[in-house]
Length: 247
Image 1 (cartoon, rainbow, N blue to C red):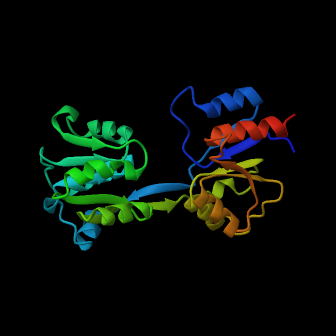
Image 2: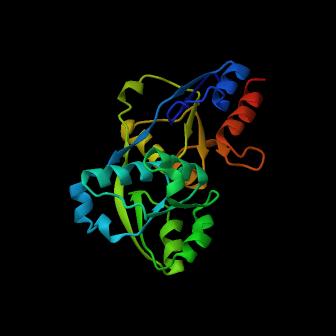
């Protein structure tokens, strides 16, 4: 069956040269963007109930831009002045540069990995005596606490933001040829919004093994999988599939 419409369960890309827009032009398909999940900040009162006092930490571990935003949001809400001596350990260079939104980058002690959390290990090892705070969401990858525990460092996790399911009721009568998912929570959101969802001829595209498992556990048929050896990104997987389907 030919592909004419695609729904991507993420915000619309802000860059003009996004591969999604190239797919639209190349294959003459319509791509809509709609986040199935969104992030909600945890209030300061709730963070205090977690026994988190920002004064007690000398280093911050940041695994996402959301973690950056909500750490500084809560610092402001709690009237805590982040000291210039604070050390920042960022999972990637992109997260490290994002810190410029809140601090003077060149005057701070900032360390970053390449991509995976394990890439931060050598940096954290050098500062084992610091007291680390991990601002995180309620959906934290298991490898993060496991890695920190294996290093034997003094660290605490604070739930500073949550992943919530978006209201998609306005999409009830809208049909798409392909639905693209990037997280297990996105799959959960689909069934929370549409408990009677029947896949039928709708193709399901998933990114990552945990998303694939959640989809299959909910009885969905996976038609497009990324990453794959020949398609490391969702856009490459879509491009390859549409090329075959629209012959």
